[in-house]
Amino acid sequence: MDAALIDKDGKGTQFFGDAPIDFCHRVEGQPNVYILQVTLTFERSAQTAPLPGQFCLIRAKHTAVRYNRPISVYHVETKECADGSRNVSVQFMILEKGAGTKELCKLNTGDMVTVIGPMGTPWPTPPAESEGKICLVGAGIGVAPVANFASTLPPKSYDFYASFKTGSYGLEYLNASNILITTDDGSVGVKGMLPEALSEDAIQKAGYKVIYACGPAPALAYVKAVAEKLGILCYISMEHRMLCGLGACLGCTIETSEGLKRCCKDGPVFDSRILDFPKPAPRRPALPKDVEPDVSVEIAGVNFSNPVIASGGTFAFGQNFRGVSDVADWGGIVSKGVTLEPREGNHGERSLEVAGGNMNSIGLQNPGIPYFIKELLPDMLGLGPVVIANLAGSDIASYVEGARLLDQTNCDMIELNISCPNIKAAGLAWGMSAETAFYCVSSVRAVTKKPLMVKLSPNAPDNRPIAVACINAGANAISLINMIHGVAIDIEKGKPFFNNVHAGYSGPGLKPLALRIVYDVVQEINKLPEDRRVPVVGIGGIATWQDAVEFIMAGASAVEIGQAKFTNPNVAREVTEGLKNFMKTHGYKNLAEMRGIAQVERHHAARTDEKGRFADLKDMINAEKN
Picture 1 (cartoon, rainbow, N blue to C red):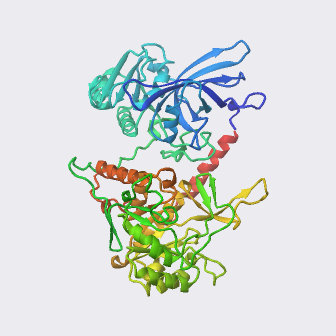
Picture 2 (cartoon, rainbow, N blue to C red):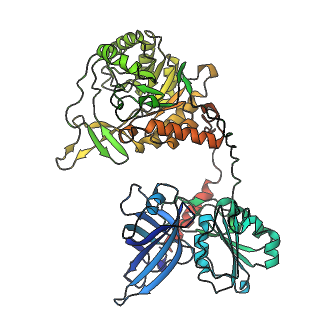
Picture 3 (cartoon, one colour):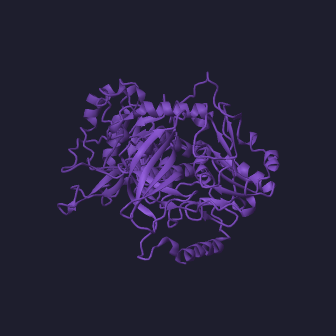
């Protein structure tokens, strides 16, 4: 490790701990920009206050997010205390954007945040020959680290260019020779974007020797291009999602002409000459104001008013949620899993909240198919949405007889749950292999003309051949995934929490796995002739309209939502409305225009530069040692 980061007692020079908030307030005229100030108490003389250009990782003490957020330092003031400690007041300018920053922007005086820092490389000292010829550029929230740098420069020794969408902020600590502001709406300064003020002619006329810049990628790409064209030294502060912030995890690398560089450790400040800004992908124009997107979808010949379906096992038989939400908000509702004979379900504990979701061991408790058909299905059919009967079983005879009975009803579709244990195959689920899946699905297909959607298990080694086998056996659609197996231990009793040991895990934490399996299965189905392809319904951790968009872009025709309805009974309405708004602003007239656009061809050609990349990694590790 760099010796400069360790004091004589082997302790780090950085701060890690909780710090009280002095204040957090919204910047006037900027609904999503906040200034947050904390006081860090340095107990060791070797601990260093943040330098201009550095950042800290911060997170609310009481939080729903797991990782700290990298926030550039906006202003620093240090006060020496009588006991030898130092109080360092650090201001951060925060754009309220994701979950972590939204939490930070809602904190009040006296609340605590966890802080790690300072981190990263500071702005380089201006060359001696650049005195009076320094250009500072801040765009949007990127004004913060540049303004912090400006406050350390001699007064009137620099010009400052600031570019905003509307209004201006972050300029309080400046003592520039000239401040030039552009705004998209013309509310302050020059109307237009950064090039309206920082033009090639303006740079040449001012005679700048060095440029320091931070902001969104398009602005930085422009600054880099102009600086290099004119042969001017240019430093750019980059941003990236981060985990450790210390250079250990290698999760925040960016592409440079010198290979991959860590934004947290090698940056965030870089010489512009090694940076590469890819051209942004063109964005679809929004739909006209008088055009509403069509969110209806057809699956296996059945029309859904929207692609949001209440998943089996979490909505019972459609009646339980009627007192708190409108069932008609759903495009479809799936019954609780029903078996030929009634099932009492599992004994002992049945549910447990865990990180990212919950575990449950219900055991397919249900009243049996004859009772379901006579007493429950008629009321389900009167609710409005498409009605899908979830059929479970343990042997072929029970599956076949259950399907035969359901075929005589008015349910719109059967969802065949082949994640159930096959009692003739040592308890393994029917959907664990292509062979058993084909046997089960083809047997059911022989006794029903109902549209048949087969629900696959994430516990199979590979669902792609299983999905194809189901299609070959007569499946009209595929839904996936079911819950993944997990285990919980009661540490007070020293034994498994659930009587059956294994239980199903579901919730938001399941989404990346579910999305990966849906993506892969859709990709496999797309290899089939077009007339043999079937729709896929995505399931697993879906709680927001953004989640739904991801699954549809991965190729799903619709989504099933389970656990999210427990905490938000209106989730179907919110997801549908969010989906409509997204489609409207991004120019999608219907779901078909968006479906599967994230599918790409994956090439497995051998990489020719692996040796070089490993050499880069080795150099990186050696640098840490030295």
